[in-house]
Image (cartoon, rainbow, N blue to C red):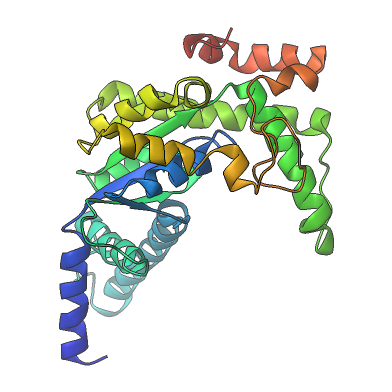
Length: 299
């Protein structure tokens, strides 16, 4: 890389960050991909793919900088009588590096004229939501929650799909619902609590919608989302976003309720937990997550 290439990269980053940032959050199998597709259909939003900026870039960079700072300290102590000629790679340096790494990845997607928001959907964004807010303080978050009992069923079914079609080539995992239930319930609870706590502190930065509302009243739900983002809430735009992302369309004609265990969009209905969870599953869910589930309106 020469200096001109470096300057072009800076110009590219300036262009990227002339847009607003948007992060989709929510527990896996809560409808994060569905709301991402809808957002990406809006003519003022580009939101596709999973960048894993927080859990890969930020976590990896934290380890790197921690080791680097320890090395600086050790060299200063052993060679220069404790006099450090380089100061630590600090939090501002860290945040600056994250802007560069994230911006370079965001720039790899086509960005049409008229785009206002650049977005990313990585479900684990929910766990790192405070870090993302610190690094990108102007970013907005669209969070989606779903009945944890349905999440438990959908997650277990997806794990079975991975075991049968992907993981079996490398290793085996126990995908029985009874074996996975506690782990998946705790995971759902962690994601939901993290975003609830964030919303209590930063209500202007996040909107939370329900998977169930996206099914039952999509027009009003999306109107609220786009209004929160200060984007067009034109009925024709919202209808287009809904119609382009109906279950039947994204699955090639399969109707909601017709199960395909090998599809990421497995069934597309509300309340499927009633067909799969045992009394033991339900008692365990209520013991672990009943209070939060009730607060969210899932009786």
